[in-house]
Length: 317
Length: 291
Image 1: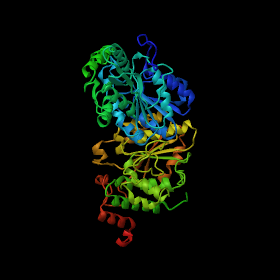
Image 2: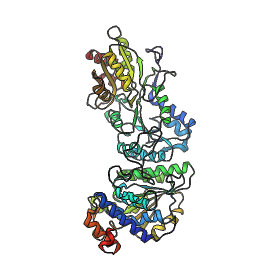
Image 3: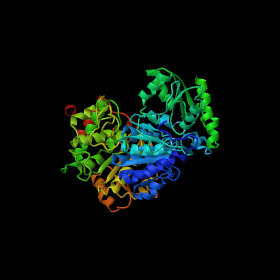
Image 4: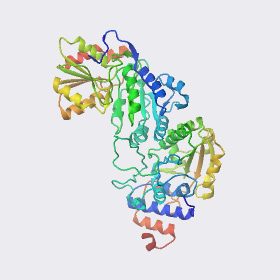
């Protein structure tokens, strides 16, 4: 487990969105072409720091996500690198057509940042829990989709996306979650990370929910030897890493804070069905909307905590 | 760009629109014909700075076509202005053509994915789904100011397009950011695809609405070159405010059976209709128009 912090039980808790905020602020200093846009949520999605440090490169559009994406596209056509941030339910949720035409088809260098994704948003309820955004974005030609697993990785992903030339989607979550990678953990867009090696079953996940997978793998280690893969880039999917692991273990469980249809589970199923048919199970939202509740309660109820992963693993075995 | 006789050029633009749409067998006729005088002025009136040999010249004026279905009028002008060979107009909407059914801008990066078709030089934005170009123009105008550039952003949109809420979001943001380098020209032709604007979704009093949204508003006759030309000195008088020009036009202008008829919004002329249209436009005989 060279990629991980030394002790999984006593990890620092920090929100993924904070990693984005730090990365964006860092970019402000490093790259004068980086500009930020937000739709009246700059504190929530952590654009606040950038907006204060670089007010001339910050554009506040108000509650108007479609316009935000269009303005971002215009800035990108003129050579800037815009990060356009809101809640994922609003953007890409309400701005998908603008993203499709003015960003993806145009191949404009816009980074779409969808905050507060997943069920772990908590008390705001299902209206604000984006469980469909990965599907919406990965279906778009020219678009890449990155779902980092913790604050540390999010900062690295933010920096990497500024260097990547082309449309990209970065998915963030709200709650404080375990920081199980560390500063020396490498991050490369499109390159899956094996967090734990194993021989009998592969868990492929994305986002902070991977922590549940790591804890479950540890709990089950006497019973079953589990490999855990961080598929932080859903598109382009690292098919080589996936197929190699699937052929080794013969069983693949996917886990994500997203509908099982169309998200990471869907992407993995597409690759495996065509190239390496493997027994698999998708863990996520089963074609349903969420509800209000504490983040932890919801993760438990919808089977995305450690116990949920243990149950799913046993079901697959 | 040399001074030319604008009515003569506009006539050629209209003839090209008719021919290319007839060849294509599909496409939007009325808006392209109605805005031909404006586009003629933009590309041949000596006001708008663009370079056919350097279409992405940094200091060019940006002409954004938000109502992307007006593509034939833009293509016609760009072709006549030498941005690409004029013969290419006959490839409109055909497989592999750079003249896509709606305007397309595509940025190439090293290692980036290619399009199924090449980018047509001179096109600044992807458009078609309405409202998007209005926001893109705002972004371009902000970018110009950030880079301390002096060029203008001229966004051509349409009255039917204003049904899209995104246009109003964009107007508000243009006013908020005091984008004096931005001119919205709204083709007020009073038709949209399924009827007259006043029937489908009334937008009056559109000038008052735009003023209330913080824009400096001017109304002109879109078939009068002097009035079209007056936009630019007027715009310079208000360096800290975005401008909106309500350009009254006759949809299908120049062909009597197309004029003011919303049914011509989204269809092309067939061969016989094209011949009839060309005869009316040129005032000549059948042999002349077929040549």
